[in-house]
Structure formats: C-alpha cells, structure tokens
Length: 116
Image 1: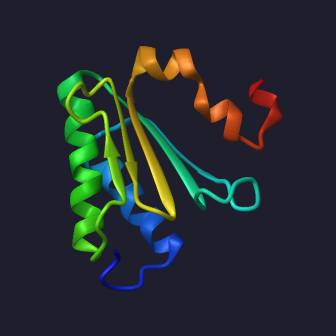
Image 2 (image 1 turned 180 degrees about the vertical axis):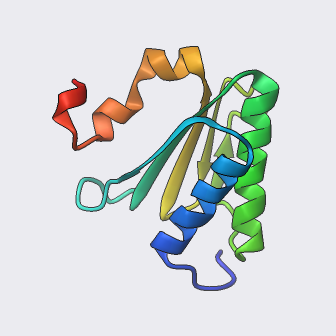
Image 3 (image 1 turned 90 degrees about the horizontal axis):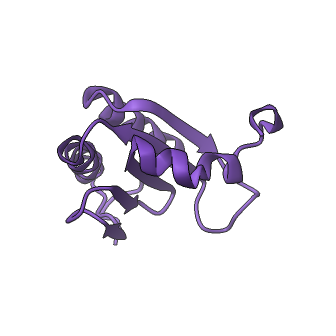
C-alpha cells in the first residue's frame, strides 16, 4: 500500500529522474491513460548489461520508496534481462537492448503510428 499520496505525474517524474540518473539507454515514458485500466504511464528503458538493467531497476525502486511508495510488484530482477517494476500509476520495463528490440512493446502502447 502507498503510504502517502503521489500523483501519477509526480511518480512519472520520479521514474524519469531515476532512469536519467542511471544513464538508461533510450528511456521513453508513454501516457497510456484511456488505453488501458492497468496504469497511467508505461516506461521503457534499456541497459547495456544485466548488471546495468538491474541497477536501473533498483534505482527506480529506490526513487519510488523515497516518494513513500512501495512497488506493487517486481519481476525479473534475478535474471535481469527484463525487469518489470509495477508502481501502480507507472509500470516500468527495463530490458537488455536485444530483448527490447525483440518484443517492441513500445509499438503496442504508442500513439505514434509513424513508428510502425
């Protein structure tokens, strides 16, 4: 449970800051409000190695906790090829570049059809 109220936009900004601080590769945060009931924002970023992916994900988790939020779920931290951090209003995917290229999740959630 969240201990204090944090707006979805503020949480998005915390996630963006964590991704930037950890030098995540090609970070992107999509506004998916109205497209899914799961979350308001989907964040995507790559790491250069499993260790980098894990460090980025841990930084996101730490930023959320600093904001008074406990992640609802964390998946993939052990293998660190693809780590999913569910913060409720923001779902964060941190992946190795080849995994991100293979699944291309951003295309599913993107409003920009020019990427297709």
